[in-house]
Image (cartoon, rainbow, N blue to C red):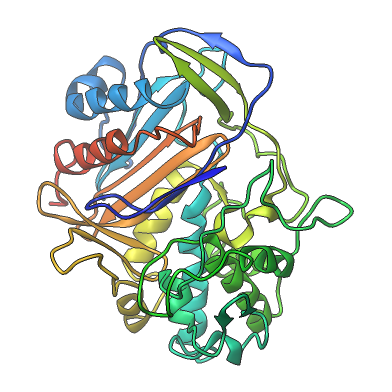
Length: 404
């Protein structure tokens, strides 16, 4: 089954895939830490022990996170003047291969921010109205089982407030009917997702469901005449020069090289049982979670988005209008992007993601700070979200200064 994490103060919603694994490998304590730092041309960047010492608070938080996470974990952080990476453990079992900032992994629900950006571009172009009913564009798609697409708007879908029931696609079940080649159509995925009954009236409550973003994938295809992976690539990935970011086409199951290997497992005392994450077709998650990226690229995406490089000022303002669980909440969910208040008082924007084999999260601030985290296992239960929050907050507040 899949586990869905609701909002609680400073936590983003996360969809975690829990899968059974075979060929489990027994391992003990994590390998020694590895460090890599980078800086703009002409400036010096610390490395090795110097990096661990300079970013000691983040290094300690990373070790605490990895102790509850996968075989390896890494954080890539910095500001407009410098970037640095700390890595603990290994990206490949039985090898000393610390996760590097240019290695590929599946970002999971961080894909939703890419999808939202394209929908908001289409709104900028006058091709869609955020407050129009989804039935105006996809007549009859959102219907039956208590759903009425004439009352659910595009904004509702983007903000997870349309009342759609929770739906977590999963390689071992909960999947739509597959094509003969093992790929999945967005329409079939939406039909499967809508079998989960509504949780409330449109606009009345927040409920995180992948179905919202699968429907938005259909909307993008209808309005652009392109498959959703092509539209996101041509409108977001290529213009930003994200050369190590891929929205894989249906059937493209392999990660590009170099890659962080994903695992699944359980913890028994001080020992870990790891097995390779199950293979699945990326079209199972599609516009809700299919994108592959790197720590460097995913950080660059959120920095570009929040600085206005993809949307008009009006479009970015719409994206950053957040839904809050309560008026005094320290976080909220915008249109495909989350807002969090950091311990140092800064406001951060980003998203997290969880798929079989990976747990990820990226946050950026408007003054240039950024931090992105990946670990290469996903339990589905006892997910170390508290340690993940602590790690990102530490990297952004204690070890990365504001832009001069």
